[in-house]
Length: 343
Image 1 (cartoon, rainbow, N blue to C red):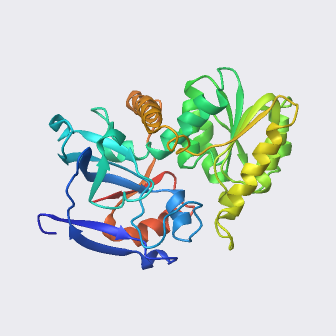
Image 2 (image 1 turned 45 degrees about the vertical axis):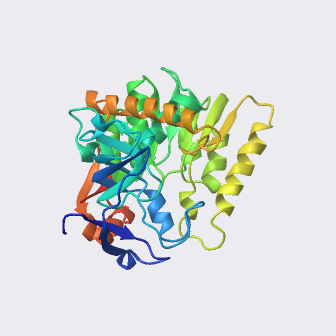
């Protein structure tokens, strides 16, 4: 790659992983209020897996560069940005655009990564960490001594959520396939096999009075079961519809159904609460408030990472040029941790 050139991965349409295009173009310049970030780590999340199927509910029209988040070093800044920012390692939520060696971002959207936390380590905790932190502490507001059910306790969000909860003195029941149970038990989680066990029946055995919160990324029938497992005053946080990943038809419909259920459940006079969590909620109403909250919460996540409260789970580190392999690996369901992309 020549000086002044960058590499990016383009999703041209609904394609198999091998259909993603790796291309070169000139490195863009940072405009006023912007920073040019040289990517050191980005990742493959569930969002991109849905996007390549055209199933992510608010994805942009094809073609576009995927990449929900990234970690990198500020390479240059535009007018109205402090030049001292150059050379700083930062993280950013991008939703799209992260699968590139160089990305222009609003400087106000960057969150500094503390010394002692590597780029790949930090990458595992950006979108997954902010999602886990805000669901646990801002939505469910779970307290020490309470009990929660985490679906997909070994997954990207689930694994961080579990560790944050345990650090806060919360009892955790977690669903996962049997091969992950030993690792979950070692953390202090009570595992439930979603493939072979009746989840509602098993959770009722473990928590006869119900659980104080459920974190459900599955959607479909699972989210209804989750609601019925709540203790009085408990909170359901739904944050996805993984069960519909391979469905055809409207990509908005699964989310709209979830939103309708959440609205209906919140009208019931039983003291329970339900939320559909979207990490971008509130950004359109108040960009400054959204940024302040994101910076505060992601800084807390990075501090937990630095202390060792969260162990970064990296399944593999692969260069952008091997994106098809990386996506196949992430979608295989066989890996523990995040597939990280590097320049």
